[in-house]
Amino acid sequence: MNSMNPSENVISCLQTILDATATGNYDLFLTVGDSDYRVDITKENFDQVSSSLIPRMSEGYTTTYFGHLKQGETQTYLWKLSFADDGHEYIVRMGMKGDKLI
Image (cartoon, rainbow, N blue to C red; front, side):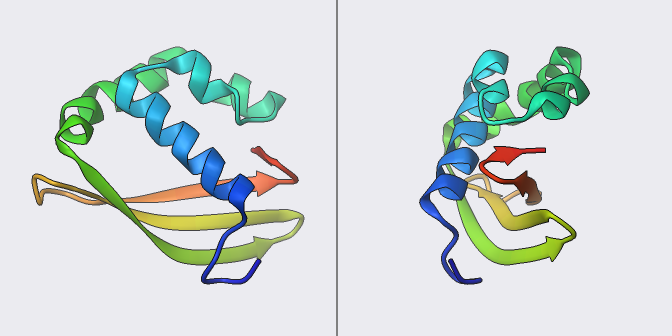
């Protein structure tokens, strides 16, 4: 892996998060995280974020990989999330330890 090409597992985790958010599927969202992730991100938090993003994501979106940072034992991956409506963009920050989000 280098800063221009995240591993397939990292890309798969990102896509799972995006798919879960776009469809409001909390159970799918939890599949990529470790036990702390599953406790820290409550259904209420997930629903609040996904409900605002579902309409925008359904119109289309793209991701642009910025790179990653090593922070202790954690790898932090950064993407820009842009929408077809050309509105407000977001930074997607994924902290991973091994093959799970933390």
